Image 1 (cartoon, rainbow, N blue to C red):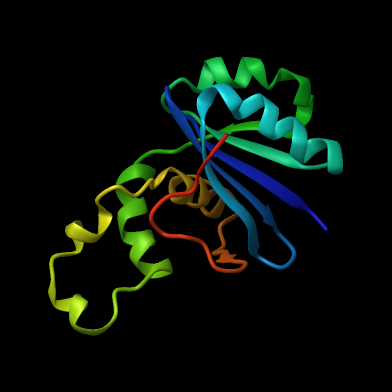
Image 2: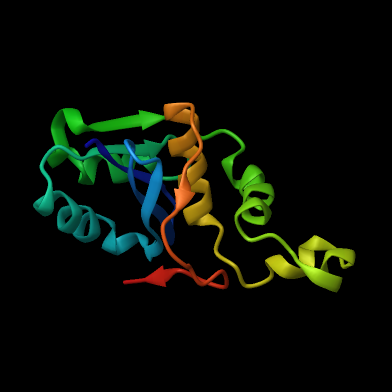
Length: 146
């Protein structure tokens, strides 16, 4: 069973996905403050030393990659071009608008929503060239966690 952590790095916050490749399921999707990234990654890797970690090559990725150097060969820096833009569309694939709300402009449903975890999902899906599904119900408004 191969597990992956995918990170959409940012200056203030990071999207983080923990997923199982074999079942193609996201086990956890969170948005964390950047200062808690190392702590969260250490928590995941304490449980399983063979977790592969992907980090997007965008904003502050070099800084975060240096702080994750303890991962050695299990850390890979990958392309994340347009993931923030694409996360808007992927959000509505995961959380489709239903009923009469479908006739309203989609942008009104994206206010106050952290799309960083969805950007991390896109990074993972692009890297592995497959689509993942969410495991369980996630609150679509925010996934912010310390």
